[in-house]
Image (cartoon, rainbow, N blue to C red):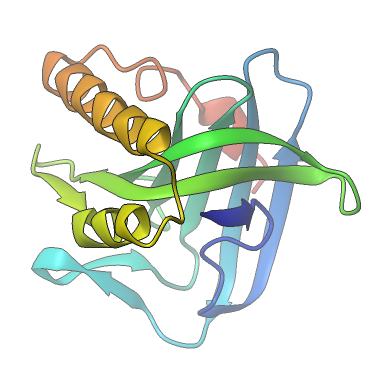
Length: 171
């Protein structure tokens, strides 16, 4: 299981960026990253650019719950992709004083076209086989995946349906 720190995730290609953290929300930790300069654009399936100069990454990590959301936005703040991590838990990293989560391997992506991808299923299976996650955690991932897919299809995912525009202002 991987511990991911919100200030470090998805910044490999970025060598210059701004970040804002919102830690006082009642139900989640939120960060907004503006990518000032990336060494090379990050291209996802269907030749879509998810990260480039002037793009944004909005992250929402629940204080309780098992699904974290990352939204990749272009320079016009238009959604390029939703990326969901199934997580074990989250909190504030004691030493750095920034949010973290424990990633349970399986991810779900959603494009504005409605195209959904479940990714890293093989990685999840290997993690279970190698004992990196318990059977209980494995079952949790499968349950959360099904619930998330149903919410996406029914357009009632609370993370997606929230207005985040105020967090993007001034960036």
